[in-house]
Amino acid sequence: MTYQKVYEEGVQQLVQADIMEAKLDARLLLEHICGTSRNDLLAHGDREVTNQEYDRYVDYIKRRASHVPLQHLTGVQEFMGLSFEVNEHVLIPRQDTEILVEVAMKHLHDGMRILDVCTGSGCILLSLLRYSNDCAGVGVDISENALAVACRNRDALGLRAEFLQSDLFARVEEKFEIIVSNPPYIRTDVIDTLMPEVKEHEPYIALDGKEDGLFFYRKIIESAGEHLYRGGRIFLEIGYDQGQQVSDLLAEAGYKEIEVVKDYAGLDRVVHALF
Image (cartoon, rainbow, N blue to C red; front, top):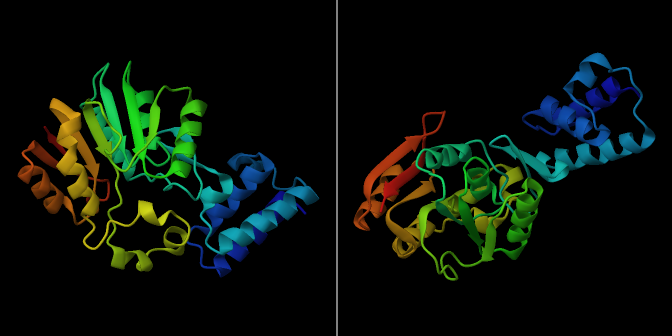
């Protein structure tokens, strides 16, 4: 069967399964399996797909049609122009989280030390290290499986970072100039309303912010000062409706210069403050 026909078959099945970006996902899966690029569909649609490639594609399309995330099938997700390994043990890095990195980078200077709380795949910390000079970083997460992914991403990017299994700051002994975090912040009663790709396939502990979604912000803000140098800064990703509440928590804890930054959709996305 030709490359074009295989692609069209994949699109049809994903459309029938109500996959939102059926054409894009069908193409990306075919490229992943065949080692091709977007140009192949346009210029070489008549090339023959091997039986092995076709069988694998059929399997991937079936799994994607059942709402397994595309990134869990390909095993990778781009973030800040870098390629990160992902699987079911870590949140899939999202473009919105790039705002957190971009805001932190404006305050990041050579030689600073960075702590990433709830590091997951390590994408936030590793991006900051990749785009700075002589900075050092520690990423902490309660999940041993997530940290294994973060370590592989560190090694693949050739960066130096320490990853430590810790319940928030429990095993952190040092101080830092920068603390960043994208903690779980979705209210428990909202999780069941999320897309199947998220609620059924991404790690629950990385989503659940408890009853009001603010549980981890309280815990982080309560203890962060013990691990920040005076004049250091904290950067937190937030939900679209949490800007004022997280700002209030920071103010109550004595932080200054509190600022809420919006994402490209105009929604509150990051709160940062001076310690």
